[in-house]
Length: 65
View 1 (cartoon, rainbow, N blue to C red):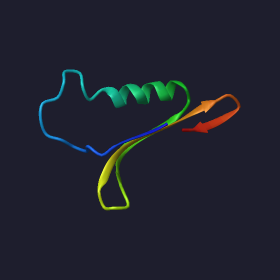
View 2 (view 1 turned 90 degrees about the vertical axis):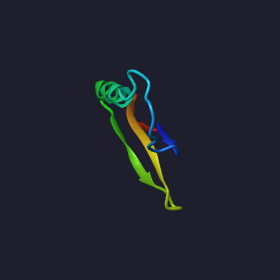
View 3 (view 1 turned 120 degrees about the horizontal axis):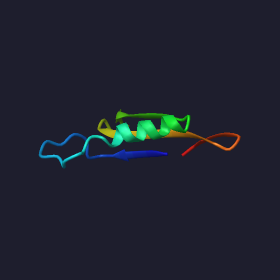
View 4 (view 1 turned 135 degrees about the vertical axis):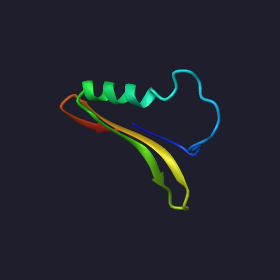
């Protein structure tokens, strides 16, 4: 699974408990024996997006989504 956002870093108040989502995703992916990566990625037009990509084992092989 891959998720991208064009919003990037924004200043301002954050909701209580925010910022723990990636940690929770990393823990769940690790429990399933998968891999996860998250961070800024440059696009072809020079802007940056934030991307979260996870690869999870499914059945006899691995499925990339």
